[in-house]
Image 1 (tube, helix red, strand yellow):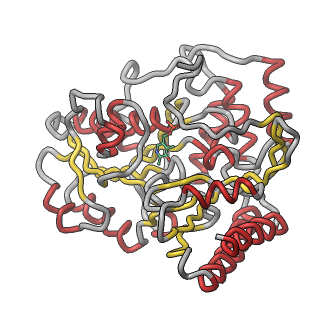
Image 2 (image 1 turned 180 degrees about the vertical axis):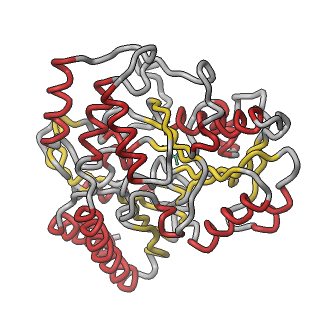
Length: 386
Ligand SMILES: *Cc1c(COP(=O)(O)O)cnc(C)c1O
């Protein structure tokens, strides 16, 4: 046993510092980092504005209890409310906590309107909502739940795209449908806009809640602030995390007034959630997300995807498919992707795996075109020698 448990299969590589899209390893080598902590470092490493924000706040006040008002949190909540469907927000520290809070809010809403039996949540099989007990059973993955019984009840599952099954699962005890708008760990599987609309309509018709997990695909990652904006729908509850902290652990659950009203004093809480230090960073992330950035994400995405499609055409026996939206990109190989990811790493490009033989590519949102060029060049080089 190591001093760190073996719950991660770590690569034999560590880093001493980073700047923007690049990381410097402990042996002094420079890597193009298109993992960015798994869609976490929205503005790359060592972003000047984030550095300034955390330094400034660290000299004033790190942490106070949620028993007191936290103006930095109110400021960030106002910005999120202004930009999104949400009326009200609870801050957390991670994605799993945010999805758990989303489940709690959905159940508490029905409890508060006198329908305490409406507790069941419908999810996609083999999705990903985090690693807490409820979240692994919500994800419906055998691998993630194995050995962690007893099973947490209350979740029903349908296979991605199986609308018939989905419809059959909705019953009088259903509280909500909870899906990732784009399945990240699941292999960058995009739910088409017409399906997201269908989910909204179904939830409205059945008087249940729509929870869209945007922990990975939210916060401008897809070229819109939320991925569901492409479908022009309004969900009821949205957990976020990853990108909103720019590298600092922040999670949140965004809600409409209708459901937020159920979260009366004492119903939920978190010691660290929304503390001044975290909120200062979150504010500095939000301040850097404007229409110019979204435009740039979209043009860079189009450019990146077009070039990846060209590589797919050139190497049809290696690359099966190009997936994704914005800067949430997947290269699906015909075979297991492990060796390919290793080769990319040897060529100083960092990427990360997802299900279905997919190589996930997650550049910072402010990635430069020449960095995309470099990535394309490296991927092409690896294909050529593969
Ligand atoms: C990463 C992720 C989570 C869990 O976030 P943690 O911060 O690791 O707890 C939940 N949902 C989705 C869609 C994610 O990608």
